[in-house]
Image (cartoon, rainbow, N blue to C red):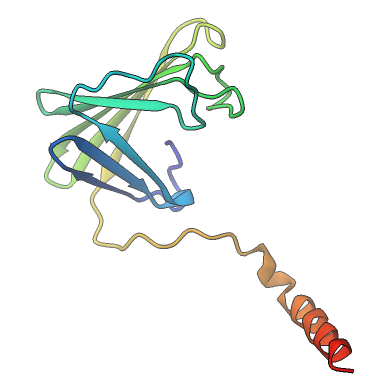
Length: 151
């Protein structure tokens, strides 16, 4: 969430029982039940939390809880409650609002809104390319190891 500005495309698909939100950055695909399935037991914690969705009129509301203490979500504690709202406000625009509620971290809940504009551009594979700078050395080392092994 909130990785706007860099590899920030979303692709949203819906079936009868689930909504899938695929995000370009980090290839995160969130499969969100919208069939009334309750949240997992509070003892079950997940790195990306446990999301459940429902419709309020034309707005998809997604509540995420049960974050793992191993990962910090925007500096919040594992007890953060995140509520996202996706509302189509124009043929090519979804208003994306998200509220963070964590009394362990903030004195009060806070909300932000980002307009998501439709794009004809494709979603690309997200990959780190740090190795590109060292590829010449990596390949030279591999060729040296191959030469040593063939002696």
